Length: 246
Ligand SMILES: C[S@@+](CC[C@H](N)C(=O)[O-])C[C@H]1O[C@@H](n2cnc3c(N)ncnc32)[C@H](O)[C@@H]1O
Image (cartoon, rainbow, N blue to C red; front, side, top):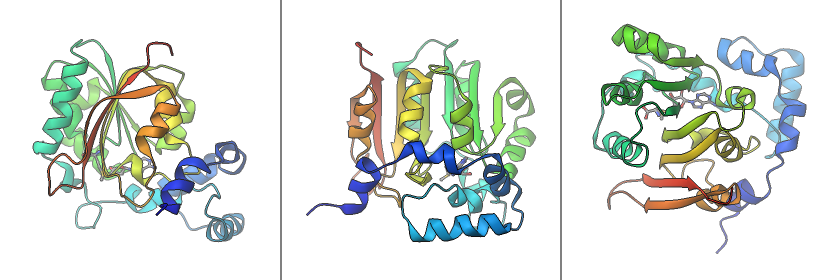
């Protein structure tokens, strides 16, 4: 039987609508957590009425995560076996220590810190959770200062990034899976990445999609896949490479 949500999130996107509806004030409202204005209440009504209506509100809980809340950076401190698997693949497909590496959803920087210790020196991360970035800066001030760390929503950060700015992009989910399909996060990740995209995904998360098919539509083909990474895991490992002809 067809999975309607997966189908619509993959094939019925309208990415052209996003920049017409969402601007800086919507991004800032999420990051600052200020009360909604009258026009934002109208926007909210459209979001409730139409599943495809552009929105960034889903990031609010994450942006205001902190110690003691459900969304706390303290859940993302350690390199567990899942994170190690992802990082080993990053190193395997991209052994060049001067390569530009992009962590989408870096939180308190556990993967960035580990990559730094493996010798990588050109690392960029973005995350909406201010308390996580502060924890990163407190824990590893030198690595934080030597890396590019941005406090922003993925959507705005990606929209501003030039094409092929990074050699490799990675993400440990659920992270890109939290982005509402009104924003074509896959298209933008492919646009900003030169060669490899390494993902640990929770494929059946709330905004589930045909991930591999979507990446293929934007020129990235799977070179290694573990779906799932272990019989009792909800994570899949997907390693993608830009097709030679692209
Ligand atoms: C489940 S956590 C995973 C964190 C990190 N990838 C790790 O494994 O250590 C999801 C992360 O995505 C961030 N996030 C979710 N939606 C976001 C958005 N639209 N823009 C920026 N950050 C977002 C959250 O703040 C959080 O740090």
